[in-house]
Image 1 (tube, rainbow, N blue to C red):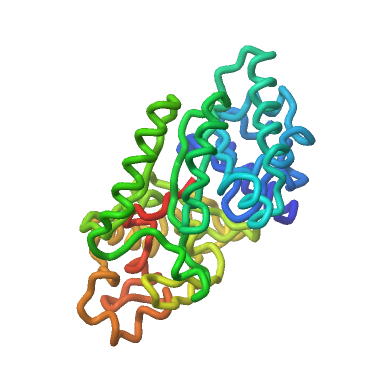
Image 2: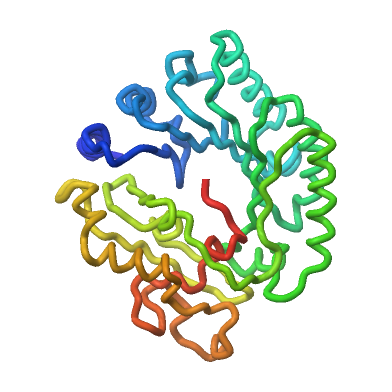
Length: 314
């Protein structure tokens, strides 16, 4: 984020009584930002949450920073081999960094930041959940959030553990995970394993928006940058969708823009199609990207795995 954009965003957030919580993170490591410490200090009166891989905790965290943060969400996707192959992270170093955070809290008699762990599960790493729970049981963890993989290419399509129809195998596995978590005194938040009727957008229902590094106001993490997904075997192009830039209008002006209000109303009331269980999906030309759906709503959220509770936002 360029400094002028950062200054604009922080100023608008500080001056708004309507903005209560701020999440630092989304599509990168916030502790790498040259503005991280300044941001925490400037926004210390807001409810601050940070998503991180925790690799820079020892290098970047101080008592003055930690005391102003409400919670950390740390991504851990497996034990030693999985973490090193998938992220290039040495598992023991990561756990040592969690210990350092707990040390800062203990030495300063702090209740927060709370520490949540997010685990993106797939066929490649699901067995690592059990030994990971054993390690985390003594690390003062508030929640462990299990979230499913959204494949980025066809090679990953076979790694998903959720399905459109009945999924007895994963129901039994998640039951075993729950029992193990009870024994370890851990609170697990588990995703759905099969397609349900219910749809709920966490961003819309919790009155949240996302500001990109260039200052664009976008609906959510998913629509914040271009990319690819494979939804139940169907490749899909994801396009960034912006409702405007904070350099030209304020966050609240963009939030109240009629296009954005109309979009949020449609999502909240589920006035959008549901592609995964549509009888016409195999022959539909609109499911290949997020440009718009068959009812003309743009951007299209009709294939969103987040709203079906397969994936959780942090």
